[in-house]
Length: 164
Image 1 (cartoon, rainbow, N blue to C red):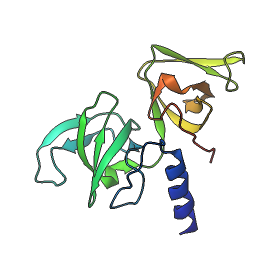
Image 2 (image 1 turned 45 degrees about the horizontal axis):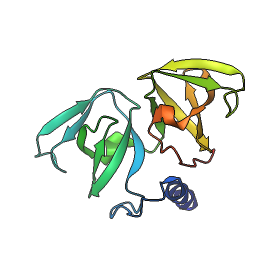
Image 3 (image 1 turned 60 degrees about the vertical axis):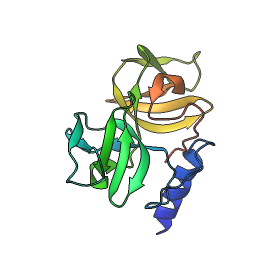
């Protein structure tokens, strides 16, 4: 229970200032970012198996934004606005990010004058470790480094994400 409360508090603090709404099911901020657990995730027109599939996500780890909750269903969207209703068991609270800039340089520390670690291309998915002052530390394969939050989708540009 204590771990859940700490996670809920961290998620609440990580939400943008304008996110006032809390989900009626989970009590977590709406909107919020999560990631997909599977390489094939159906997004439905409505929150039940009887609704038709409008979209299929094909990338495990893809960050999506939860915009609504209804019972065991979450309405999600990707960086292009595509999405629909997904069963909560297909979503993970693990934060990931999508590189949206043509390239994103990863640095050793959160400043562009530090040593370059790697360069990631648009469309690459990485794990989110932490964010501070407009910079996020991410991990892609065996590389870990800092890049500016504006290069990423899956985190708000002013979001503070504490290190685990």
